[in-house]
Image (cartoon, rainbow, N blue to C red; front, side):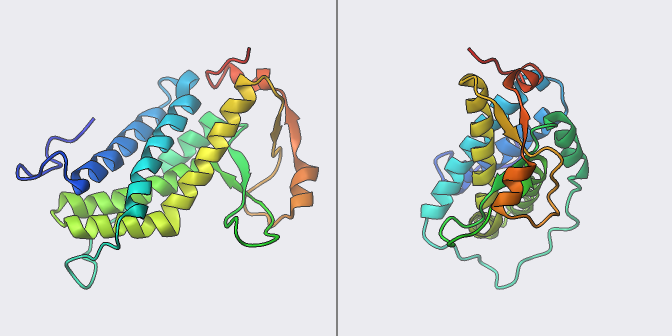
Length: 218
């Protein structure tokens, strides 16, 4: 669902900037719709699809040569839209599978996994994408592309990749009819080691989450 005022009439649908902006806006719109909770039964599979599609745009940004904005200093985009409601809606919707464990840098040796939340990750991704979209809608195309590329490397790319892995793992546990290890009682402000994570991990059977999240095992 694209905003008809998003692109200039002089821009071709084949333009790199147009395609990236469309992917960004599509993710924001779709994720916001899922957060409303109108179709909770399909939330997880739909989020898996949306994050996968967003990372395709991220991959294109990552493979592109360094983008240099036209202006030396970033123009003010005004106040950032509040994402707390989005975060809270997803936290409620995804309970008890919101918390997962991730490794920030797979190339950093002996780095212990840390707890994270899908709801936090989605809200953070939307915040980054909206910031670039504000530049794009104001006609600052190079600034928008620079921001999306920079934040892909520094924040929303790693966050989306970790979130995709969590969502894919969740769907796989259900479809393969395997018990799911949940971080029962674990919170994201705790600094825990891998042994701590293993000790705290509870057992949540697939049938307890498959129905509410719209997934069925065999």
